Amino acid sequence: MSMFRSGFVAVVGRPNVGKSTLVNSMVGQKVTIVSPRPNTTRSQVRGVLNRPDAQVVFVDTPGLHKPKTALGTRMNESATSSLDDVDAVVALVEATGAVGPGDRMVLAHSVKRVRAMARSAALTVELGGASADVVGRPTLMVVVNKIDRVGGDGVLGHLTGVSAVVDALDAEQGGDPVPVEYYPLSATTGDGVPELVDALIERMPEGPHYYPDGMVTDVAEAFWVADLVREELLYRVADELPHSIACRVTEWEWPRVRCEILVERDSQKGIVIGKGGETLKEVGIAVRKQMDPGAYLELFVRVEKRWQQREEALDRLGF
Ligand SMILES: Nc1nc2c(ncn2[C@@H]2O[C@H](COP(=O)(O)OP(=O)(O)OP(=O)(O)O)[C@@H](O)[C@H]2O)c(=O)[nH]1
Ligand SMILES: [Mg+2]
Image 1 (spheres, rainbow, N blue to C red):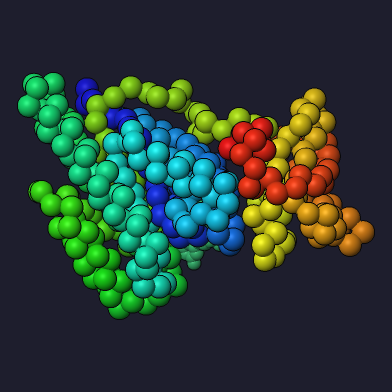
Image 2: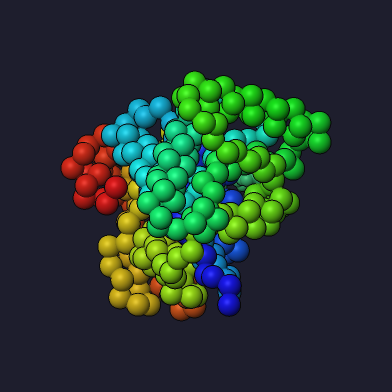
């Protein structure tokens, strides 16, 4: 019998590059929310891919950015700490624009992390723990996402640009070059995703089932419903409001579920509720469709002044 492979894969990148869309596509089911607004994902979300011979745990992370709030700082810490204990790193950039300073920061972190992984893998082999092919080869997988939005030449040009940046970062850090592979793909159409998944499975070390078969995420149902409410709101509100929204389920007495929507200012309350309660009503209908049949979802809007800036509010809200 062939060995069972398993491991953890961190998916990192600046906000809005498509990390969550890619994780959903790799898992084959929606496990993490997606929206056109940057900073949609606020904490790590694990999505599990089960195959007869392998289990891969993808760790979706908040987009790395220049934080302007205490929440932003925590989100960045959550993203960088995801790199601490993984078997592979997937770093995303977009094919639609040049590699910017935000991408450079992501790629620099990723190169550094994969270099450290390669060192500890080499050490394991030296100590006689396992043979090199079993340990798997720590590789940086650079994904160029959203290729559906650019032509073939655009993709090639972008690949050249990204690889020049990665090579330069790698050289700056010194030592043996880090193995890097490039995967142009579209997380929304799925074009190129199977190739990435196969390559990742190949690189997973021999290991146990970390999650029981059939379990696709570690997110508790109440958190998931709160996230679905926030996702629906992100599609309906504009400007700075998305950052001011936090959602949490305060009561779960099936089929009655009560979810609170926090905003930071009185003026934001009306926008979330909408004319005649229209926005809240739409959100409720859309979320209920994604819950088990029969759910009775109650939505409330409450003002919690400057919660993004207050450490104790963040503690209480579970960030
Ligand atoms: N055209 C196109 N759009 C994409 C693709 N992947 C993601 N998107 C869109 O990009 C936007 C952001 O996607 P997300 O998956 O939420 O991005 P993210 O990197 O998780 O963002 P944060 O959680 O905010 O860091 C959404 O509107 C997606 O539909 C793709 O391959 N092609
Ligand atoms: Mg996300």
